[in-house]
Length: 349
Image: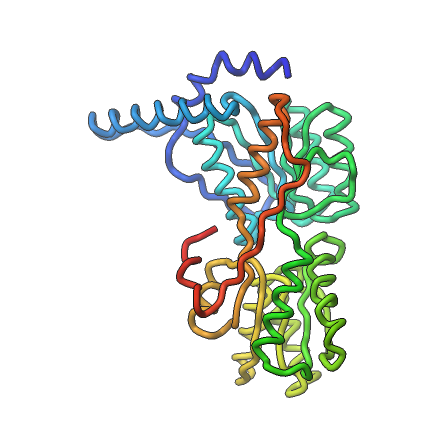
């Protein structure tokens, strides 16, 4: 791209203006955060340390080919731990590679995300990272970027548009299969009843994780789904839904399948409040889930590598901008967190 050449003239100035602390994400409204901040060293030794770090960052940025680029990202939400992990990792990567990075909270709304993509296009970004709310409704985001001649890389959740430049994520069908099979093995029987907490309807993770669950259940005709409904990845919504199911089905429920950890944890809160003890399993490996596995409140969680996904998406974006070869699809495996290995996942994201 022509503007990339211009930006490289200012790369050194951009890197020297960068701070070295992690910028925390937050806020409930659609908002943006920049990777560039400034900080004043307190002492001469601190200045020397900063100088050394700046030199290392400059060298790393130059070798990656990312220095001076502008990359924008829209996440379907920044109100869940997993999406916040991606955004924080992206900000860290941007600092280390001399990239001007701006992120947006899509507020779980495809129309909002389209508006954010249009804003990024108007701002002249070099590439766009798309974490779509809806596989079909967010197709318009891809169309807008392609029409503007800007690479758009999908991450974590999929969009149904063949013109997407590339995709980096984990295979959600396999995650659904893994948690369902783990629950069956844990139960030690092929005859029991479950309830299933689903993600936002129409999102690729919801569709594919449920597909994985049913793939396994096809081999176990005596396992019955008593109830299935969406709790929108929300702990509080899952708690309310589980309360309703406990009232309706009571002791008929033998186990809980959550398509993510937040919902599995919300269900567990309702179960404990009712004075019951039912096995719960989820997906993502968020902090509270690792703790819950360690103390027996969840039997397992399928770890999803937020840092690996977003870093892969950003690196792919840089390759696209620079005209280098890249993988059209990059799949990062899930990893099951169990009572035997949970310590390995403390602090990982």
